[in-house]
Amino acid sequence: MIEVDGREVRLGDRTLIMGVLNVTPDSFSDGGRYLAPDRAIEHGLELAREGADWIDVGGESTRPGSTPITSEEEMARVLPVIRGLRRRRPGLAISIDTTKSEVAEHALRAGAGIINDVSGLRFDARIARIAAQHGAPLVLMHLRGRPATMQQGPFARSVWRSVGDGLAWSIRRALESGVRRSQLIIDPGLGFGKTRRQNFQILAQLGRLRHFHLPILVGTSRKSFVQAIVAGEGLDVAPGKKRGSYWTLAAAGADPVPAGGERPTQQSAGRSASGYSERMPLPLLVGDAAAVAASILAGAHIVRVHDVAATLPAVRIVDAVLGSRK
Image (cartoon, rainbow, N blue to C red; front, side):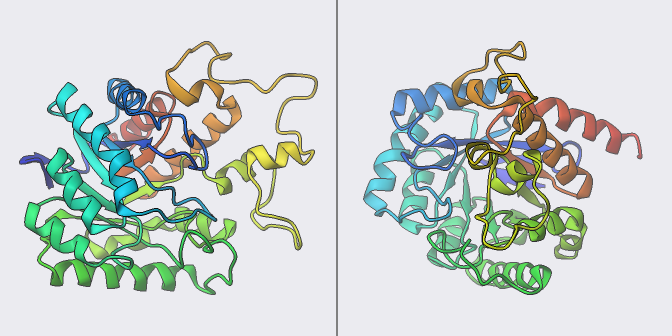
């Protein structure tokens, strides 16, 4: 049970869906599409209508190789969107995806109720004090290195030692700053400073995080390690080959599309969705849904996704399977 905006949210009865709303020009999958506040607000509302339990608003890209921006620039992007979402739908739960305490504090005042810190307090430990002062839930993610260089290696020899020790450190810092344990959520940080194989090792053994006795959030949506497997790559990147994705592998000559056919999209499959999902290849949507299903079966309480409508059926099926065990 966590408390969001003064309301108790029960975890475990069903999987919660966090809808991704990137208000950035350079995110890895939808950069620039929702940079305009009005367009971002409409997309956030559409994600909620499609089934998102809360909307995760981010104004700074954390894709591999991304460049940091100032707090002022980040706030100029996210605050109008948070205010607009709160005004248009007062009861909607909103999280601020940031590593800066100044941005987190202003976002909470603007109407956000949750802080999602991908650095796990490593970049700005004051975020924990802000969360404690406002009584806001705090997502602590494991990140190895920094976004600009995290995928260049060297990578941890033992991914579980790295993730376990890193999350334990973040939890201690949060508790020391006054955050209630009942308001903490952990995220193993898939795609953040891990190899392709390590990401799948985490998915396969996600239950190892249960010893923290905290809700687990997992984000696999549109990440290159999922895209690469969908495109037919193996668990290990061949020596001298760049870490690929569905898009880069297709451009390099791999053929993740049926021979002689166009790459099917969600729209061509019979559904016209809002936003960027109209352009997403159908195999990638199916791959994303499969990764989400694997996450929930392994123990995730919350999943972070871009394509809510395409993912919701898989979430409901897996929840039904788990519910039948009780």
